[in-house]
Length: 387
Length: 69
Image (cartoon, rainbow over all chains, first blue to last red; front, side, top):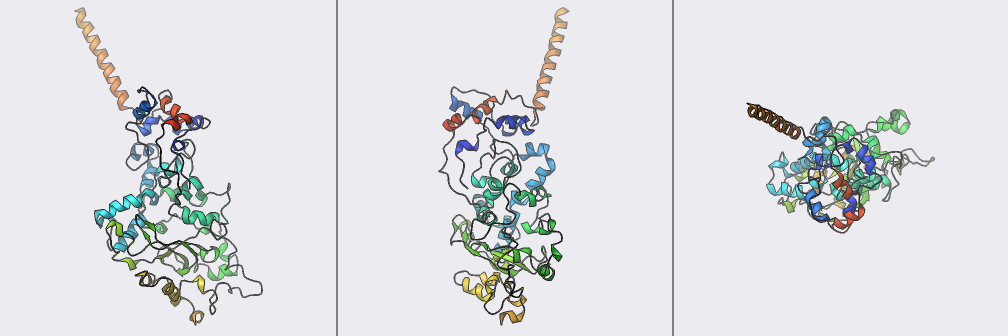
């Protein structure tokens, strides 16, 4: 996403300014939230600006200041939000700790926390990052002249969730767009509502543990009996196994450096790595850009417990289509002909041991095979499929 | 006698004035309804493109940030 120029970030257009001033938040004084000085005390514009900005709080909804601003009128939402996934990135912290072999990220050397705050935590959000400005991760800037509004799909959600979810959703990579991408009609918040986004104050271990996540069945209420495919596989396969298309995967990211290898488009069905949170047996899995030495620049030469979590991770690709390469079957063929393995046919859809070993050799990707031993599907498929 | 009364009156008014000022300061809060006059300095600059262009701190060249995903 192109960044805004410095002046654009704080520009309140004259036609929108009265709209803001007449809004509920426009009834608050500027210095009520931002502090600083509202008088003109300088000899010239530069001095006036310097004086006005002395003691200024650019981000009043940050954790340090939210109690004196947003929380004053929105106590519950604000308190919950400050403990939410978006504000704290609990999942990333917990997975880092587990792979490092400790119970909590705070048990790691201080250099890890410093590195985390420097390289990762810029992606956390505040109230303002979703409701007033673009998020900090894309260098901020007013959404619309300081008007408070619902999050914008492109300027807020996709600003952070752009390289995978955003591209998939809008069909900007090899696959078709998501069927739910209807500009002007549907927004991210239609599924991911404020209850999920703000949280309920619970510190969830990771995002799939959040019990307020949307389900396809929230809208598709009678889908379980809609056709033979659904009646046969309902509950065993996640919806995306049949209805998502190929999606982006990454390998080997190093904190402070970035991705070491180009991303690639792939589609893999694996065993569900989160059986406690989801009851499916088979789900789509995405390779995440973790490696044994991902955090070497933070003083962790290797992750001591790297193999305790799979690197092919539960995924919900946002490129849903009714008809995909697996569901669009020729009328003269068997209904399973595009999905079940027969000889060499359709093997590419599954995370199989031999393909894992071929693509992730141990000398190049140490620990990869062991880490994903619980996700490969070989032992869960009908034996005749792999003969 | 008269000056003593005057002194008492003056002291009472002074105490009232100080109390009023302290109360006003203490009740200064985020939800004070704005007198937009006091915000005119902020607003006059932030709604003036030319002024912002002249004063804005230059940043690094616009780039791409794809986000984490």
